Image (cartoon, rainbow, N blue to C red):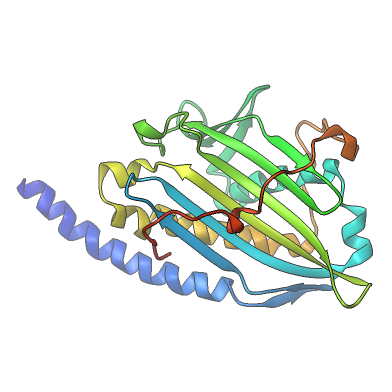
Length: 253
């Protein structure tokens, strides 16, 4: 018990200092800016943790860009490349420590390499039409997943929607990243505050960085490359993540 108290006396001030730094970094990353012809609007974060311990986190941004440039990449093939770009960014921002390994049926987010699997996902599911696109991976298991969250219908989703503006030469691209029905092990093993101060803030920072990076329109080549035409995928159904009912218990991040 004495050892635990000493550990907490060390951990809590460090976590509090990190939380303050992360909060400042999030505000700096969340401001509007531009990259070339693309205007980046303010970034938004909505993160909650319900009484059962399930986390839901949605980050979003609006990019105003040339209509022709967006039309050229509005295909299932580029939606697949967008999915790959997310994993590439995750690896780059962690200097290669975290990377993604592929099989026919699963995606593994690993620290260094397997067997240390942080998160395991099912194969991605795609949907797209002329206005919206969706990529979703179901969360299956991993070191960062609490026991009750294993194959509990949790998911990671990228949602995109294009909307015309008053200027025919410019179009708004709305992008959302959602993690839903995810049961973090750190919240289960320690406290919800520990999750909010550490893992949740890291996720928001990484996602903000990814959303801003998309203004460069530098999409990675897909590892699979199975989608070509819009007829290859079904049309999206249901609202955007931010338009769905959010869980209770706001979690500042």
